[in-house]
Image (cartoon, rainbow, N blue to C red; front, top):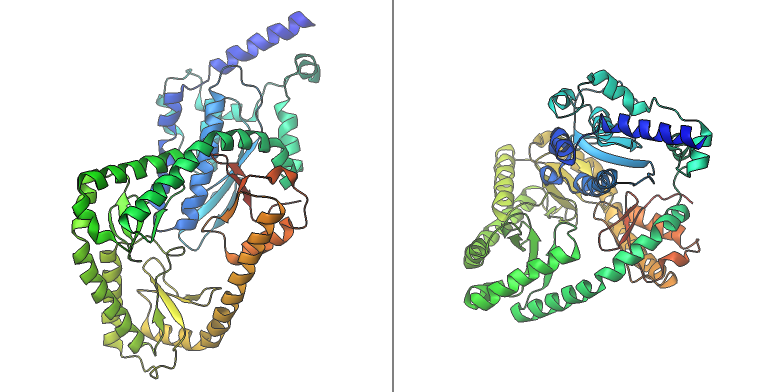
Length: 483
């Protein structure tokens, strides 16, 4: 029996190796996929961007494990990505379409070699796989490679009993039958999270020290990051800003009282924050600091435009909500307001002066129909027909006032539940991703308080849409976790 099992094992390895991609080939083969889901292309869609960032981290970890020699413990991994809308396909992949122009694709990875995994990913996202034929793989037909996804080689159960290897088909069946629960996931991931968290503690202290020093030295309101970069990355950015302070202290006097945000481009944001592009050199940052007085003048013109729009729309307040809107520069937002103002000026809508005072609205250029947010503000497309705009605002005005009142109550409840949950589980930190609403956070915390979770003591817990352990040890759980 031993000889037969050894022979079968060698045969299996030979077959797998004959159709395996190298790591470089896999990256090349997945270029269409990365182009379709890369977070950098979702700058104006914070929710979809956060989902793709999270899933890409988990996918990269899965691909890395595939390339580790002798690695046998593979757990089926469910991923969700937002990709640009295409014609609906007839596959079994779960898809749902969002209002922002993307479709959400969910699929489970359970393959054990790079080629099968690459094909699985591309097919799940309805992307072409023809280019894989040109890569340095065995000359077997493309159809044969695709059939490998279903693992045609089936070993007798005694093989897994004797060798101790896990039966991938059994694991997949169990994953499909049993939905991941919060306690089971914490059981499996708490240990690795603790190791990563302990490793990150010195850097976390260093980050806090640098942030406090620079905030005090430059008299800043705050220092923030647009994306969920790791602690080491953030420390590096603060060290870079610290060097600029030492080299050119005179150019930084204009930043007093402002918030500095590390993001992907430099300038001033629509919210009035100083943006420092992480890929820019000190020369670009210096130019931004030197131009701040000009930005302040543009800000004054922008506030005047907001006030004029408010007067034309019965006193409704025009606001910009960082967490919900695309990250726009001051120039981009000014152009948006100016275009909308000129359109209103031409239409002369008959709103009674101050009849909508106390209500709020935000402008978005990537929508076509107006809507009312759960927090009470109107989301108005810049291309919205004036007559439709007037009818919608008047029809929803009372509901908007009720939502605004409910928002204040909801925010108080949310804060109280966060504080209570953090205290009960002795969490070092409890926070949520921007894409998680207050209603979702409240529901999550209420259900957490009903549980007994000793694993969470001293941890950093992020409420998200998926399960994940971040590189610095933060535990991410979906707001709608199952018990």
